[in-house]
Image 1 (tube, rainbow, N blue to C red):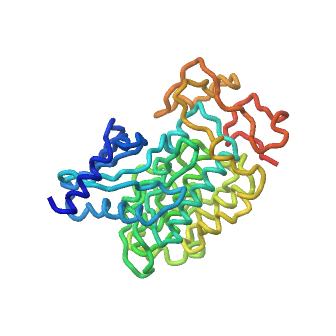
Image 2: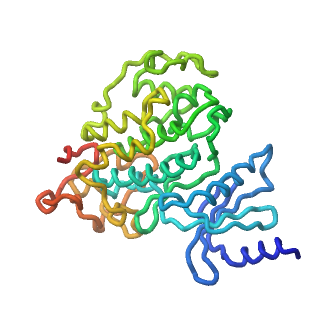
Image 3: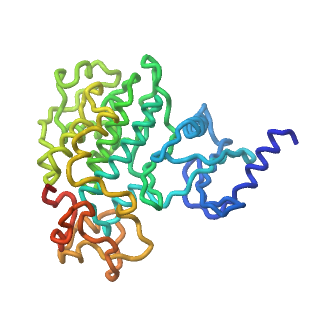
Length: 373
């Protein structure tokens, strides 16, 4: 056994796989621990032997970028080792993801909570973009939540660097509901603006508690976007009709965001609108977003430790809190909560000085709230 094999063997013995927690086409994820300390971890076993036509580049990219990106809002890569034909990535263990939190109808969101999740997302993304890395698959279930409430960007399998602006890239990236229109029209030259569009979709989903732009095919995705935001003109988005896969989709009028996001603050709507600009060069950047008035206006972002989180204990459905049934809470993919139990979190904003006076005995869905002062 040579030195490389010995080192790999030592790395492999350092970690213990315990329980399988997820599986995809090319990877299996286990909950594990460090043998010596008992520290929890996640072990992502990538089936290298099953990759064809260079698809193993996703595994290589994930290792490459996670080794380079060290930030509190980016998942940490603890170790890497090989086993037979598999590559194993040892990652910090995180309890849940933002998609689980959005779908859990027993949880109450305050505007300050949404602001906190958005701030952490933008901080992690700004660090990626500052280091010339595009994520290219931002969505709620790739935003993981640690036990202390910190949000961390994960799954860099589609990431790539963009230091050379003239380099041709694939448009077959980003999960459809979070994919910007330039990629749907086949653009092979793009920038960090593609990630910003995805973050805008996530922002809207946090406010609505349901995906904002959910198309069933690429063509339907474009129609869904245009129905929501209006069909772009050449003035709105110069040159888009010359993109490789451009096809006319239909004429739809622009609907003010306020019509759907009725309770969002003016600053929230402004930030959302600047993320969902058709012209990629006019989209807000991650650093500009962090300096947007939205994040400094009241209410201030909730401290991560006080954010809503998935509880192992049963809690009351929101419709029992206010006495009104909510048909959305029993929709597809939403688990009905047990009828008994306690709502763990006080229905007040932790940042309001008059929080006692503002205790709320009604459903605190963001879409139904009055604007915060």
